[in-house]
Amino acid sequence: MKRTKRKSIWPVILTVLLVLLLIPLGAMGYFYVRDQIAISKIPELQLSDISFLEGSDVTPQPETELGQALYQARRNAWQWGTVGEAVYTGGPKDRSVEQTVYVTTLDVEQLTAGLDAEVQEALSQQALEALRSDQVYGEDGAYRPELSRRAFERALEARLPQAHEHVRRQEAAVTFDWYPELERWLPREDAAFHTLQDLRTEMNRDPDALADSLYEAAAAALEPVYKTYEPLDEYAVSGPVPTAAFFGETTDPAEVAELLRSVTAQRLIDGQELVWNPDIALYSDTIRYYMDDTLLVLVWQEVEAEAVGTFAEVFVADGSQLRRKISGDQVFDLNFETTTDFCVDANAVLAVGGDFYYHDRNCGISVYQRQICRFDPVTCDTCYITGDGDMLFSYRHQFETQAEAEQFLAENDVLFSVAFGPVLIDNGVDVTPDHYPWGEINDTYARSAIGMLGRHHYLTMNINCSTPGQPTYNLATLRQAADAMVERGCIKAYTLDGGQTATTAFNGELINPVQFGAQKAISDVIYFATAVPNP
Image (tube, helix red, strand yellow):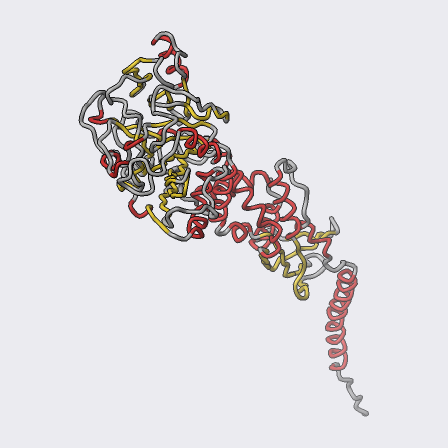
């Protein structure tokens, strides 16, 4: 019997296994191809998809000039873009891409770094530009807030043209996810996203509010700036002690010119024209000076009426610095002193002989600490000093009753008077008389006068013999003395007691030759004091 050969089932098994293997591979290939086709239909990430970094208009629009300037500077600095290649991951349903994004912003902290020094400089400039000190300082002595704000704005606006030098660049790897239903790439709101979003939000911050916060920060960083003086007590018998280091003397007019260019000097001078100039033909080469925050004094000598003219030009910060000191610090006290002694006792920077009101005569209307202590209105002209340092005059026979004079004192805030005269210049008009009962005005004597050149701006003058001990050699008539004050631009001027009383003391030292060779003891002086309080 013939044996039949059996067929092997392994090929079938292998075929079945192969088919079973190919089916999932085919399915996988199908789905892979399908996904690739689907992925290929997803657009690549575009710059437009990073729209959360697009700038937008701020609300509200800036209203201030500084706000507008800040707004424009930040808009100019704001840029963004991509860095390197995008890295895609996931399939059509969980497609993601990571893209490094950069932004550039205005670095406001860097822009404003060290701004306080420039604000201080701007404040100083505004102080120079002000017409009066009360336009600079408030009642608390600090710079007025509006000046501080304007100084800050001026300083910051000066930097904004260079804002491009203060740009900061920051990068972050942002992940974007594909949303098929929206057909959009949207950023994943993670830490990187919020970092950039915060920068964009800050860029669109209200510029006026930003300016306010910057000002507040700058104001907090500034050291408090206060005027270093207060008006002096009008009833105090002496002023504060001046600073010894602020006295000086030189033979070089260029040194004086440099002093006058300083911010301190310019603030006191306040744009006024000076009598002093480097071309003055000096009698003595020595020029003396004193300057602090409240007082500027220049003293020099030149030939005047063929004699020695000693002139002192004075600027004060406050009218209370023009003062009077009387012997014994009470009226009609007989403890007379010399001008130099008065100068030391009063802590005066500069003192000149007064009216010698308690000489052997009754003369004019004497006022001390706002009270009339002598009323003799027919004998001489009287000069009154007000609380603001102004010089006012009354003429002989102007007041008939003491009540009229008291009303004048109250209406004009008169602190004290000097009574000798006559008035030389009144409101810019030369009123020097040809005849006057005091002072032998048409004879040659040593002469003394005080004048105003402007607000808080004074000139004192002595004309003395060139050789001490010579009583009449090269002295001046009143007319010659008046001409000297007119020629130097005084708008007001008044004659003080002359002769041996015609003295000028500076830093406690007599600096002019004196008729008959020596000072004599007198009853009073006019002096200028610093208003910088003693420590």
